[in-house]
Each structure stands twice: as C-alpha cells, then as structure tokens.
Length: 437
Ligand code: 4AD
Ligand code: MG
Image (cartoon, rainbow, N blue to C red; front, side):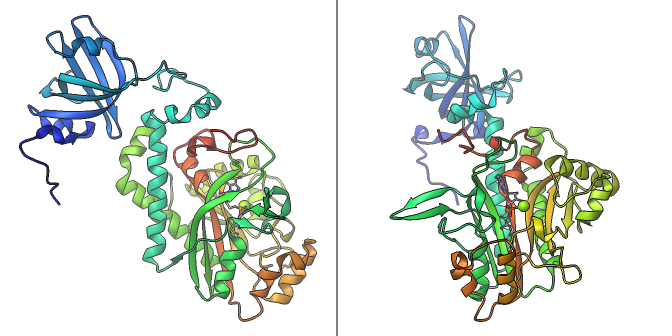
C-alpha cells in the first residue's frame, strides 16, 4: 500500500540511506549516525549510517550549517536536510549536499574501533557490544539469524506443526545432571532448562503429534571452547507414530535444505558480503554409523571428540561432496536414558548427530516409548525414578512411538558464515566468564 505522506511537506518524510539513489535531484531528510568525517578545509565529507546502510554527505563552505559540521564527532546522531546530486566518484553514484544539519545527540570519544579497519579482539568487542554491532558486517550475522528463525518457523507451519512453549524453569535435567544451572525457586531448588526434551515428549502423550519449539537452553558448560555457550537457542521438534529414526533424519534434513534454499533465494546479499562459499548440500545427506565413521579416520571410540568430528567432516567432503553428514547408532553408554536402543544390537541406539562442516549442529533419534523398558534404562543410568515421575507418568496412558531432534541455532549460523567463534553469533553471549553486558 502507498504510504500517505503529505505532498506539501517533503521534510515529514524521512528517507533511508538505501533509498537515496532513487531520489536524484530531490530534497530529502535523512537521520542517522556520522560514521566517518573527512574535513578538507573548504569541503567536508560525512558518511551517514542508518539501519539500511551508508550514504555520502557533502558540505561546502556556503552551507549555513558549515560550522556545526566542522565540529561533528564520529557517531554523533544527526538529522540532515539536503539535495541528492549525482557524483560518479561517491560509493553510491550520488551524494547529498547538506543544506541544514541538526545534531540530535552528541557522541563521546569511542572506546573501541568497530569500523573493521583495525581488528579489535573479541572480548573487547563483546564488552562494547552495542557499538561493535554498528559494524554492518557484525549486524548482518543477526539479520541472517533472524531470517533463519523465520524460515525454520515457516517450514514447520507449512507442515501443520504446532509451535509450543515449554517451561524454562524446571525441577530436573533431561540430558545428564552435571551441566545444570541451579536456581532458588521460592523455597525449592530449581534449574534453568537444559533442553525441552521431557516436555516435547509429553506433548506426544497429549496427542499433539507434530510439535516444534524455538527457545533458549541453558548449559553450565565448564570448558571454554569456540562452540559452547552457557545460553543458546535450540530449534527442537518431536513427532509421533514414526516407524524408525530414519523418519527423524528425513525431517531434519528437509528442514535444513528448506532453510538453505530460502537463504539462497532471499539472502544472497548477506552471503556475498561474507564472501563465503555456499554450503554443499543435497538430499539425502550421507548417513554413516559411528563405527564406520571411526574407520574413516582410523580411530575407535564411543563418542566423537571435536577434533574427530572435524576429521570426519573433511573425509565426508572429499568422498561425498557434502558439508552435511549424519552419524548414526551411537552406543547407549554415550546417549541419554530416553534414547531407543537398537533392536538388533542393544549396545547401540537408534540415534544420530548431524555434522555440518565437521561440527555437531543437531542430535536426535527415536525415544523409548515403552514404560517398563524406559524405567529400566533410567535405572541403568542411575537416574532416580522419583525425580522424573511426572515424565514417566505420561507413558502410562497411551504414549505413541515417537522421536525428534534438537538443533543448535548459533552453531548453524556460525558454520554457514564460517565464524571463528560461536560468540559472534550471539548478541550478548553468556559463557563461563561472561554475565555482563
Ligand atoms: O546434543 P544436545 O545436547 O541434544 C539435546 O538437547 C537433545 N534433547 C536433542 C534431542 O532432541 N534428542 O543439544 C542439541 C544441539 C546440539 O547438537 C548443538 O547444536 C546445540 O544443541 N548445543 C549447543 N550450542 C551451543 N552451546 C552449547 N553449550 C550447546 N550444547 C548443545
Ligand atoms: Mg548432542
């Protein structure tokens, strides 16, 4: 719909930096930050930045705001009136001749350099995060992250899934106890949720059949790594009446390909900005058992270390030309108690990890839906049945066979954009040392 701006009063209409090119020879009003100032004596260039990008402004000596422009400091907040004129030498091919300038707010000297011209170390950047995010490249990470969330949500909605919201304050962990954040919940001990696992399963007992959740997850990760956060966002899904964990791999693979297709269609500008190769993906993703994946790298074990995931990622890329690979059939000893054991080999489970460029981005599988076996498996892991009573209860009155996955949003963003550290994919990351800002 056409926006109804008064024709007589052009200055009521604010123009964004990205729109300036269409406004040649027109008088416009811009608002934004002075991201760079170049004073040549009789001539001053100002680069104005707003949420859409940058535009070059120019002031000559005869401009009535010339003295104010002389005193501008980087990152002052401005309102500018001026005329758009052609200038082949300016980055956009046009520039704005300043007629009048109003300083809406002054900026103090800047504590960090965020223009990208000099590299600033990550910890300092994170300390001054709101400034760091004025760098267009850093902001683009979050433009992409926001699109990915939207695409994934569309994927599920198009397939008639129900979006659920499970409690983030809980009474127990689901994935093993050691990584829990305890909180004081009135007079009881509670925890921040480690995963929506129990609740998304209970929604299968509720008969919802197809659910997903996009939400925060908390893990008291003790180690400092480039891929672990204390607070991250998961895209979780759980579905009923599956025939095997293959159904879950198909679902996850479809979601990943859907998101990547949409990024390709709609976000090429972001991908170009990062100058990266688009991931190689084609359905079906290669599926290799954990045992065979160890053979690929001439090793052995019950779970993959970060380094082993990386080596396997490289081998798979060479062999299958795919950036994605499912590693299947992890042994029960390295999986949570709720995981379905493999029917042929009870040491193994019907579970998988999805690796993307040699890093785990998702875990999933079929769940044990038969109460007696589930209880037995909990006992095997030394979990007190009393502590998970409410969960076990939901298996008593008709729990269908089901399964699902948990997918790490920040890991996915990190791997698409080849970021060096997962913290770059979080606005205000939380880790062992960082609780502020
Ligand atoms: O592999 P995880 O621990 O699996 C679960 O939580 C299961 N409930 C999933 C299921 O449905 N069976 O976590 C899922 C994903 C990981 O693959 C990883 O991408 C991400 O969440 N993740 C983290 N991301 C950042 N920092 C951390 N500390 C993470 N821990 C897990
Ligand atoms: Mg996992």
